[in-house]
Length: 504
Ligand code: ADP
Image (cartoon, rainbow, N blue to C red; front, side, top):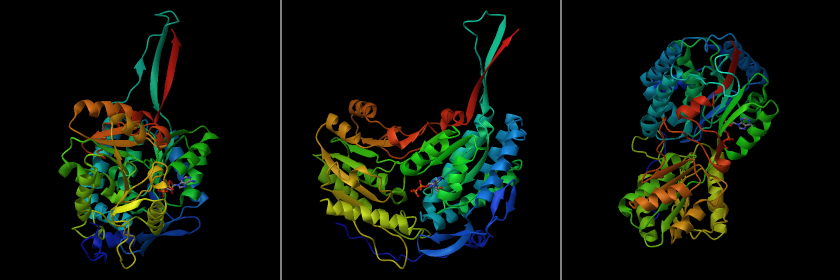
């Protein structure tokens, strides 16, 4: 049942707008200007659908990072952003969101070329998601405020006290490659709403849309130095940002391994840190479900974005009575997710982002097989002329201690297991170091709520998976992260509280 329909895996032609973006001269966006790097080092843009280099961008030097931090520091300290009327800041944020909307098609294509995701997915999910996030957060600029609290141990009437909510300062924001523009906006928007200035560093695999975004920053009216966008490798420019004494807050999304390293590196100067890290999210399917819905649901939970999603439903637990039927349902759905080049309009899943990621995912599939897992669906890579395609894969006959069950693969690979009762599945669902997301499929409302309470995860989905909303806090339990993004909590993470006590 793992025969995929054969389709051509040659990348489609780029539009003129995309070609123009790829032809741009490598530069960094600092203080509302495009500036050259101090050392001229560059990194290749590889289209994962073909494996070919299609452009280059700057690999920022230490001096470049320092320059960007200095621009953000000055812009924060002189109050050119935080002292603006909140409604003016809010307006600029809405303007930036609208400008992204005006270039939505180009952003979607660049995301497809850079990351490998289908352009249609980027157009329907990443770009509108980024715009929505910016509009939502813009509203907080004029809603955030302090509090007046009466003191309790000092005489009333003789003292006046209140709590101010102030921006934390300069934020260094480091994002991954799986949803490049969406992750960038998820970081930028709350910082701006809180009144911070920032330096954004996109991932070295996917910097195109962040650079295109920079073009729109000055047009939206942001004062120089409020939003700085620099590109470069993580262990060099990312590391320097994290350790920089003039940075007040680090916000990071990426692997748990690098998140822990960043947390350690930020400790010397006690920077505020928000971390959104890895996951190994369980999807639990109870016996009462309609398998015709849950099968494709479980498939979408893992194969969307080639499984390169922090909340990917990468551990499937299906009740013993429906396990075989569910796997059959997923095999049918796997046709829908058969990989295609990112600009193929018929595609729902693209290649993996890079050759490293391809090797990593194939390495996990091999390790699973060697440890005794069987391949129920996929398990291989279709032949192509250079792209990083992997077929949707379901592994069965797995044991809880196998690496494929415990570790984040970040590819279209799900491990499927049977269970008999709720307590057992809750225990197994919690049996990893992660706690980011979880899916529960059932119409049994009691079972749904009981399991939702038992599973240790920052987000639990019922009869759906991966639905994200800017108004709801997002983050991880255990080693999946620190702090929350989105919602009121996401903006507040960019603020400090100050108690003011005045003797009258
Ligand atoms: P992945 O393993 O999925 O590629 P990473 O966690 O390595 O994800 O990378 C996510 C982001 O973190 C990227 O922007 C990358 O450049 C950055 N990064 C990687 N290493 C470091 C580091 N030591 N310090 C700061 N940023 C880093």
